[in-house]
Image (cartoon, rainbow, N blue to C red; front, side, top):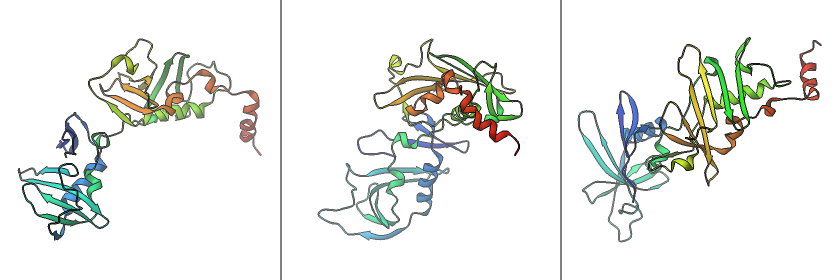
Length: 273
């Protein structure tokens, strides 16, 4: 897929998994790829478009999206995608002058940037498989473990915080389990600006039952656009995530302490009626 003024983006199915192979190597966003494949499989020409002095089809070099597709047996399809109008889209085979209108508004499926084509998932694990979580940041170290009676509810590893808020702790672990990227940082990288490679970089370490190596999530500096740099021990990729996740990824002990007054309604709810 080639957009005006940009490097081509090449996707390839490898072992039944779609990946971006150029200009970066990264898993592709499956729903986006499937939508493009559906268009290619069902494309239907509805009419030929007559030549016009001021064509509205946006098939010039500065407006079209070039698409090339190859089948497993080597057949190639190459065409340009122009403007879409409600129920039709203008296309043109590469090397031909004839413009066609095809059924459906399908330009939007190909009009995706490299960032939009990348799989956004950073982490994806079941919180019930977690053995322990350790948060380390400038406010100290906080250790959490699953509750003895509920593997998805997290409590403090050693009681030190009064009236510990396990509901909030469980939400923090749930955030770690399903992190999504809002952007990506690729080479060349201004390493100091990321804040990800210092000895005191804030981190969350997740240990899993039956797994030797823990997963570590490093939380870096905020960008000028209000996002946080982030990386994990499972990948060299640097991500950008929403800054509002900061309090969940870098919690303080006082976030989990509740006063006796706050605990009264909870105790009343637990008392038999």
